Image (cartoon, rainbow, N blue to C red; front, side):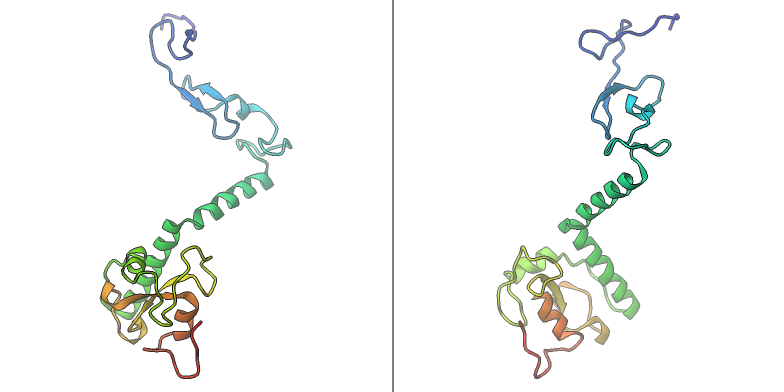
Amino acid sequence: MCGKVLSLGLNGQRTELGLLIPWSVCRYCGTRYVDVGGSARCECWDKPACARCGGPREWKKHYCGSCWLDASLEKLREHRLTPEYRAAKWQQKQVKRALKAGVHIEDVDPRAVYERDHWLCHICGYPIDRDAHPSTSRAASIDHVIPISRGGVHAMNNVKAAHFGCNSRKSNHLSIPAGVYPL
């Protein structure tokens, strides 16, 4: 480059040679920086303080050990509460159970099952709370009419919407046993 030092133009993106240098935004401190020479680091990288608490940070990390762990766990908790993540984990679990039992497997979309059944529990007949926390008894769950453990298939024609509590009480029976009342 003829030994010339590149200087930023008025718009902050063009050099005197007319080359476009895109801005990057630091994901830790939020400042904009120009990645020249492939360093991919902003100025906060060289600061000895944690970006969250201001304490000493670990080498080549923007956070100290406790803040890094807190930030990672917070991000993980938020991710695991998304309906997409829960549906994917449910699907993985059901496929694993079906493969272990050696039964037929089809893709089953929980939301499609709830809509098909009009958000009504097929065991007790009461409406399912769409906003209930997944671990409560009124939360939505999918019930295999003929349980996988008894040779039932994992397919749309063998699943129905149910309350989590009703489904738990039914367990692997074909119907709710006498003396066990639904919610």
